[in-house]
Image 1 (cartoon, rainbow, N blue to C red):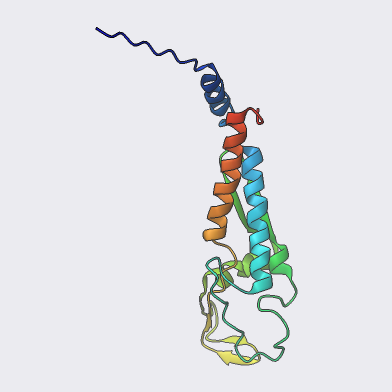
Image 2 (image 1 turned 120 degrees about the vertical axis):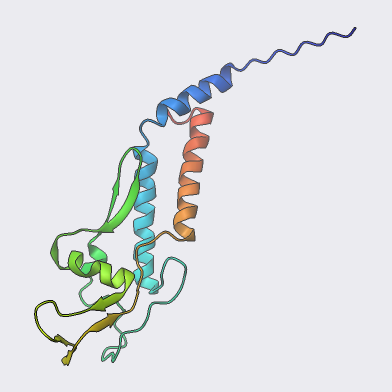
Length: 166
């Protein structure tokens, strides 16, 4: 009869797993990095006038200033985008206070604006019963956001298991 014995020294693996479990309680650093990178991607969308999947934004109707970028009348909407993050989340969004907070959603998701108290709206020097806003998505989760999560968390995990992150 043949007797084979294999001994494994798993001390390094056990130490790496202990570090990973302890660090998973507080993931503020990688979540902050993710949120900041997503903010840069949102700024890129305003510069390129494209949604998270690369589709071009609809042009303005009856544009009297074709050199002005879409969604850039004052720049307030883009400037109101801010990152937020914590131990277990990362996000970006438009600050709810002020004018950009009021109109960000209709620009990002598109939709129909109807009068609430009157019979018509004054829009672009015309009186209309409703305004159809095209979707010009500047916030969203596309392939670049996914790649950011994979890159940042992948690097963070590699650091945990190599001992570089404590």
